[in-house]
Image (cartoon, rainbow, N blue to C red):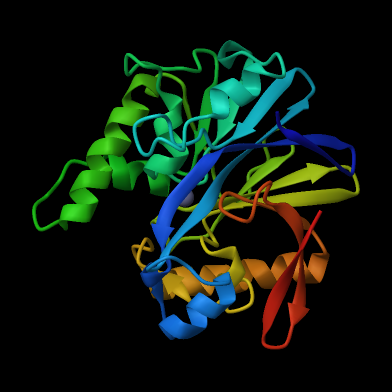
Length: 273
Ligand SMILES: [Zn+2]
């Protein structure tokens, strides 16, 4: 089952697709002992972070944010379709999927077991900077990591080629506004969702280790394709959500990933909603 939140005029549902096993040794720019202390200890660096997805209805649309990791990444992931089903939501009911970016843990879940489109009626909304980077042919000289991720991105998005909708920075669609936040990936996008007098920001992978990177936004992760740019984007959006007291919905923030950011010293802290 998901968890419900009221944000302004909006009923927002949060679903955990499962837990992703990762390592705090992937944190960049922090002493490993400090990182251990901030996450409350780990087993040889291993920690689990949630993969959160969000869904709301507006007018006649059913809008989902990212699509989960699917069943092929790790056995602890891929629960999103069951979570939706437990609330009577079938994949065919989803009309729009807002993508923050095209990494596996956000788009493997777009596919059914046969590798086709699990969401037959959903328009996929994405910033062209993100789509173009991952769908481009390899030109040679790409790292192993890029080659692997690009291959997966193309498998995940190709079945949707007739369902794509490319969005412009700041353009509003059904009260959802894409805000480019590059660094983690070239076209990583935060989505601002208006909800009457309030709003929330679905910030995707602006933060991976919520116990570390909200308090220490200077810390990047090896998942970031451009760690310095990712750092600047993180600082910019943390500043914005703290100033505006806007709710945030984080893909990897401690489940269910919803809360508010306040200033704390030179960094920030997170209050669950
Ligand atoms: Zn992610």
